[in-house]
Image 1 (cartoon, protein in one colour):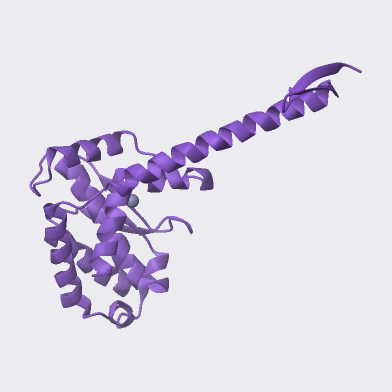
Image 2 (cartoon, rainbow, N blue to C red; image 1 turned 180 degrees about the horizontal axis):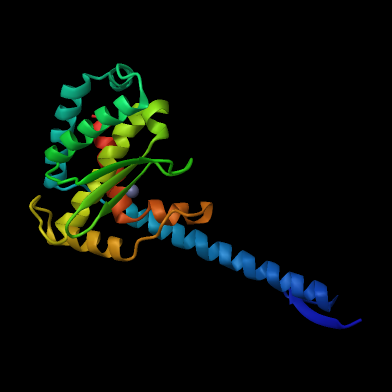
Length: 216
Ligand SMILES: [Zn+2]
């Protein structure tokens, strides 16, 4: 049997080669975890520095009054007036268009699709068209979350469009943050990538936007 001498906590100890290998792996993982924890700390500190600009406050006010006008505080009740899924979809489209108008975004297409249990919506903005995909489950299961998702995805469209035509009046610093965040976007495709995904400026921005609209 091959034996190896290792130093553990300052003491030399003779181990089998396979145990020495396992000890080394364990140390490597411990060091990685310390590194991840340190990165997580600085990422949180950085995320805390994010603050809304005046342009955002104006959009929040616009969406709040439109949502009040459409639902008067009763989103679920309003959706329940429509009995079939097709009618609910049609109503949801009018809500998207109304919110998009408040936010000065031109939506070209709205799709209701099965996005699985972890994705509520997706915005697909490009230079000449904007598509909003919404999880059809929300139409029936959680209309309030559906409206929140509309606001979240529309904020992504504002972010994207402001890169080439900043009609909202964001500062150059904010535009630079949006640009970098779009270019280096981390998708949420696994449990391990969730924190990296949710701490990106464009996600922090869209999530805070919804919080501000709904928790005034
Ligand atoms: Zn998002």
